[in-house]
Length: 187
Image 1 (cartoon, rainbow, N blue to C red):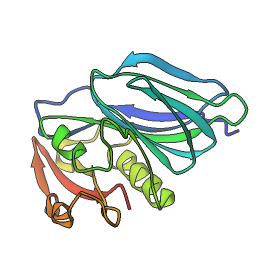
Image 2: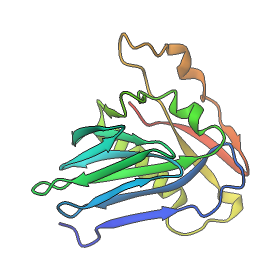
Image 3: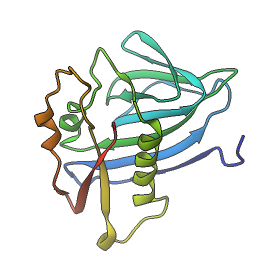
Image 4: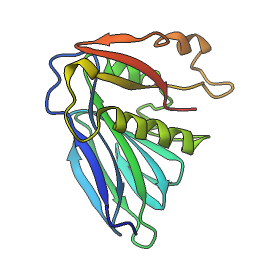
């Protein structure tokens, strides 16, 4: 196991922006490491890149492994825990703002399906890592505040989500004082 178990940052202000990256990071969890039961005040997406764990939400438990993503919504009671014998490693990105719910509605997640297996976990990992690098653990000057924003990727064949939705965030979007660029989180 690596010597650095967790790297992350947390944004301490949102200034009533349309969309804000709240936190982002990467963690190698210890066996049995658990968060919750608890409630978040922002949206939070985790990508499992190794190992296994369990995510509990809405009275259901989901056994997750490499390539699985899970979504936590604000004010939702959740628990997630690393496996005792094969603990997970994951990346996460948390976000909030006036447009956060609209963005989540364009992803494969729903209230009845808060988990999603991505077809290209390496690309998704790189995207979340790039979000982390865009802000980094140190505050940046306002002149360089460009944030990539997690946006849905192509809908699965036969999905109810139409291809027309793919054009929603194709141009840079202004979100408060940030210039926001779209990225493809679900390849």
